[in-house]
Length: 361
Image (cartoon, rainbow, N blue to C red; front, top):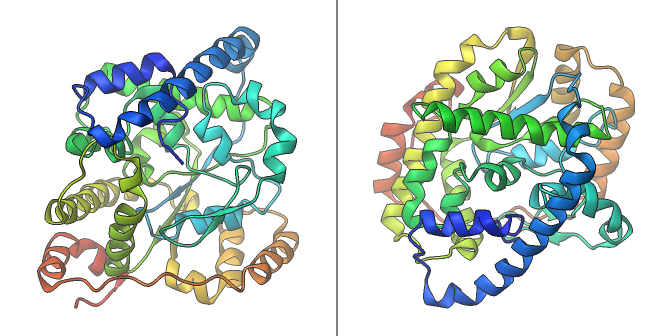
């Protein structure tokens, strides 16, 4: 999916201007498609605003959101899909995060078509995904604010600039206020017609719990961690096989990309380790991805007990049904990590190894 597909035409212009209109020649044909989707998004945005803006603003998010935290490729998507099987939760769909400005208008028009669309496999992990499946709201927030690390996927030469928005620390007050207002507005849109508690998953939120608790003091946080070496391998594969397809300009060389992955992880978890102790114990639950894979029912039982959620028996049936229907899933294989990269990971990700008791190579 093209990550810029949900942007309004005016925001696309501002984004390209922000990047000095530095576009690779082979990506120029994409501009015609983006001009079309951007114009369509703008038109439907005006229609939705005229019809629903007042109601959205007055929508109250009555139930504290549930935030799933964890670095990219730590199992957050898989966990999000599993927990979303429980009908007591609401969540943003793939269609909604890629059409954030107008889904209240466009989704009803395309409802039957979306439900009939076949699932597509993601190239980095072979996970099947449909437009109605749960998705990460970060893509929607990037379209609302132009302040998101995922924009570095489109403009890799400016990736460090966009990485500032992983933890939001040290940004001008106006930028932070815009991010907060846009985030709340998107959640209000999701809650406008569905009042169930929101189940949200966005890897950058791993470094934003301070801001999220300020917005939602009683929010619940579920953090998933995974063997750091596997996270690196899978993240590198994500960039190699998926993210590069989003590039609007020449990508990074392999050494620079490796350093970016390592530094981004460090920045994210330095902030997470600093902020996590301030989350009340009753609102925080931590999961080891490797343990989840070997004991789905046991981990979810502990989760439901911790947050005093009802309905575990019904969810357990849905869980086993879903897992049973996906027995044919084939795990992806990763390339070995060089000794040089292992050394950098060991030096910069030391806290993760020590906290979660993973052995160093």
